[in-house]
Length: 148
Image (cartoon, rainbow, N blue to C red):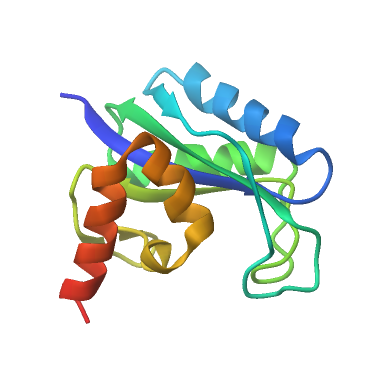
């Protein structure tokens, strides 16, 4: 049975728009993932570590037969294949792919927390997500309020 997941993608070095497009294509080319919707790419200021170039951000919806941790593995593998190096927390990046929500699953594990623990407070996640899945964006905010 297929599940629905929503991902947030961002980049701010190299050619961010091209890298976002490549990441979406790589995800869609995976046998266990089918991209069903994509938002427009928006420009946003850096968050956390603000002394860096602006980001290009977008959201996508996917149908998947992968379990959440397997989907995470695919996302991390694509980041690695595209040259992502994790040197600085919230630092510049060629590509970042985060699972924001997977169905309406609430999960806390050492490798993955769902829904994404900070998505509800980041407009660079919520704005593109509202474009393709407004009820999911609302659910992220409601879920965050319920767990405080």
